[in-house]
Image (tube, one colour):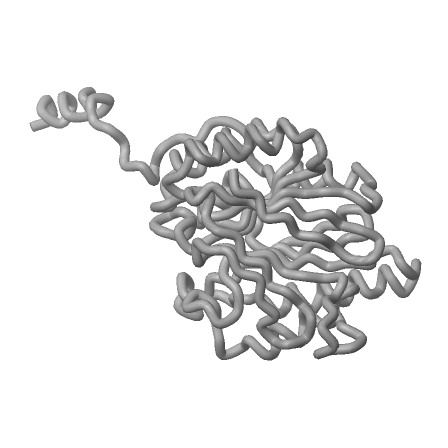
Length: 279
């Protein structure tokens, strides 16, 4: 019996490990490192950043998008809108990470619903970091949010209003101490309000909190103008620009990378411009 057990143990290398137990090599803690790099740039308008999303099962197209972004030479950093993976597998996260690392500029992600499948959330945290965070790119405050409530069955605060409240208070305190330090806010999420993944019991409070961030409040709602702030999202694999709450805050939804689309956003002193790139 013991001899048989020893034989089996000795032969374990002949079996492929379960994918969730795979060892992950290469860079980790990517969010913290890249946020520090973006903030150190001390960007001033006008500047450009790129947004792409839903790269699952489209790694060839992602390589093409990243190659094009790198060749432009005018992109300060890249934002990934989630669903880096199809099944939440470590190897998928690694594939996406390794391709994104070639873009030549820092990049930051949010988590998507596919990224939470299996042990995906733990892998995401190990490689990238937290699922709610913020940073300043010059005068622009980026709020990076986990909005995929359906994946947590209400066992986890999604959206996390404690985070939103404290972050909003902090950035407004910064502006009170040094007026004009932050003039724009960009909220990045995988799933937007009214999607099936969003906790739609809290869409109005969510909108209220976003309106409190610098640049988000429209001085003249309904007048056909937009705010200095806006939202970026993915999930639905199609392009759309929607003022979901009729308050001037536009939710810019990008198609999945498999459809060969990404955004280039230009931040200006007086607002922003979104260019849809079909590559």
